[in-house]
Amino acid sequence: MKNIKAQLAMGLVCIVLGIVLTLQFKTVQNNLGGVAPAQKAQELAVELKKMKEEKEALIGEVNSLEAKMKEIEEAESKKNVLVKNMSAELEKYKIISGLRKVEGPGVVVVVDDPPIDPEFSSDSIIMYNYELLLSIINKLNDAGAEAISINGQRFVSRTEINLAGSNVNINAVPTAPPFVIKAIGNPDTLESTLNIRYGIVDYMKNNKNLQVSVKKQDEVVIPRYNEVIKFRYAKPVEDTE
View 1 (cartoon, rainbow, N blue to C red):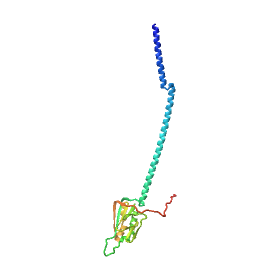
View 2 (view 1 turned 90 degrees about the vertical axis):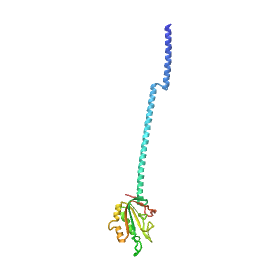
View 3 (view 1 turned 135 degrees about the horizontal axis):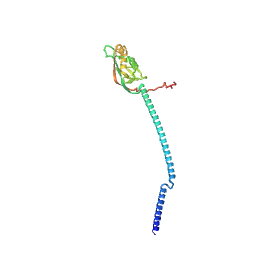
View 4 (view 1 turned 60 degrees about the vertical axis):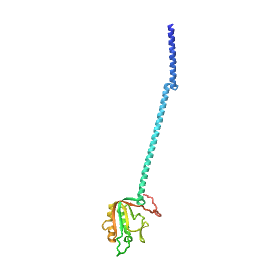
């Protein structure tokens, strides 16, 4: 009787263990998606490989975009340098042509008639010898003057200085003594060129009895040329060299 009970108890235990094992197996199958572990591992390996390939493709695309961005930045940098160089060159030619107000070290030359003497004519000496003003300007240009003005009028290649009645016209603007000539350049060179012995200033003082002073200054301001420059006949020519 005891053996039968023991066998029944053992059988019951086996049945319970069988049920537990069956439930565990089904749970594992559900967790693995209903496929064998080896097959699932293979699928995971394929998926991992695919993800790696997509990642490498994305990295390659990012590198390509970064390279293109670098090319664009370099092109923009070169373009900016070119624009800056062109702007600097344009500014230089504007200064040369007198289209820019400028300042810098230089000299200020004042030319005036001698004191009025009742015994002599009161006519202006410098007015009737205005070509001496041109001589001063030529000397300043020879000494490397970068900008010149006379009585507030910028002197450029088109500037006209001529006697008109009781005035000297500069850029068609009537002016009269004293004539103030301003020049920007090396002050020492400009001054020594004008004050050289037997030079233009010496001649004006000793031969024409004019009052002439030349003073160096650290800051000379010269206005821009106010007229509109138009070319009716001159045309640019392509440089074939």
